[in-house]
Image (cartoon, rainbow, N blue to C red; front, side, top):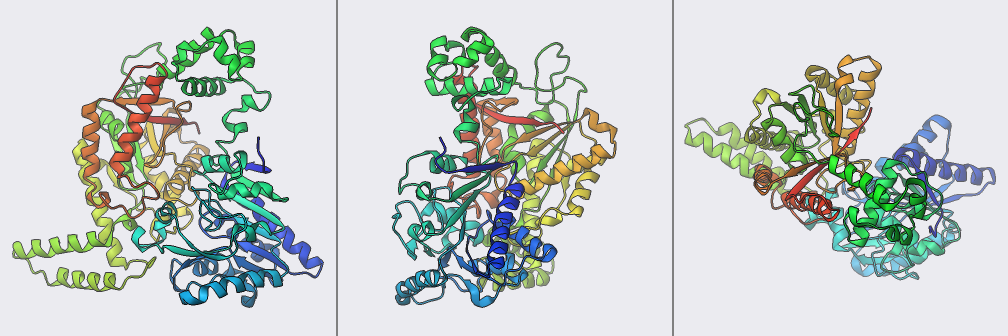
Length: 628
């Protein structure tokens, strides 16, 4: 069903290493032939791992870029070359400043040219590609709307380098590179689809939460509504994916349709749940004909008639639902997602940002506390970059006014307010805040997080602000996880010795904060296990999803239902995070507020269980267990 060759890797690191090895092999082959290697390069988070590996190959294995000519796909317009958000700065920071490429061989569209010169500049860019002999290998990412480069839906297959209007979806997705979505340029210069297709070879990479658009591009019809689908007609194109980005391909999503399959309990549940939802029937109402008509006859051959398979899947779904997330006291002989002993439990909730706990698992958080468990919350990062500049001046105004009201000398706070106002007045897109402003923004997030924990009922000694070092760069781009991050996490785990750990299982963005925080937790557990920490034998780890997505219902191992009153109580807890309400700096392509996303997602999970024939609840929070 795949119309473009696809390589799937276990994670983005392995996929990036593969793509980098292909680039390196081409560079070396061209060098042996005495020829220049012409590369088409991309920006964004997708190729970062590739560039890191190329830099490593240059420094450690002698890969030379002296014979490389590069052409970048795109650039914002208008934008200054030295703007922190410009793609010229991006390429210098991640690749060009670290290798021996000749600066005269670097070509990036110029975002500073006057508008009246743009048409001629785009024609000149095309001519330079032709003069260089054409692009040998073009690297691509893919947007959530299927764009390649900045060729938005509707772009012609014959398009060349040009100025283009950016889709609102793209602008919202890229707002993290700027102060807010309003600061994202509305125009961009991009190579056209026709230009891209003239490359002799193309590698498109996608990691994480791109599964739906990847499947449409690879398996769907060629259409200008999904620009990446035009790659189907290229003679030498390859798609490189991690496991998450490949999740909607037929061979992953429905392997029983593509060949022989081993009918494990997980595959059975997935197949039956997908069929039931597709047919709009409860699981227990599925018939032998339904199985035969939907490509599942081999399941009946293996496991018996529809009645037996239906019961197996129904019981799996039923047993995942519990109102006791830390285990029901005294429960014996029942299929419960959690152990009944020990009870009460010590529970540790890791929250990547200072609001993920209440947004993603607020109902479970409250229930754990109300049921007598010893609950701790660890806020892994300060979350300071997600506070708008307006909040800084608002809170400083309050601080100055409070001091004056209380008869306290406000001279020092007034000076801080004045400095902050002067800096923010001239702050450029992508520019890092001063250390002073970062501390103020971090304080705002800490106060909100502490207020939320008090709202739930936690004492202050169970609130832990970790401030992991990888996050503290002052910009959207973070450092990789480091030794200090792991040691801080191990120290906290050893201090609490929890029976239960909850953490954000977002595997979508390989360079996103949630993913780095999860990697730190995983590495900490691996080291603790290797060190022989005995308390790990009685510790279970549960993964929740962040504000952006939810587990597939066939994956859910624990579903915690909520009543309408509990939904409202969770909403009020989210409202405490006023700096994240109404206007969130990095909300991506979803314009809903966090509380709306959480309620819609939790209600949808409950509705799916109902559609499958289970008890109707107002909402549900979902978890998957990680077995270390």
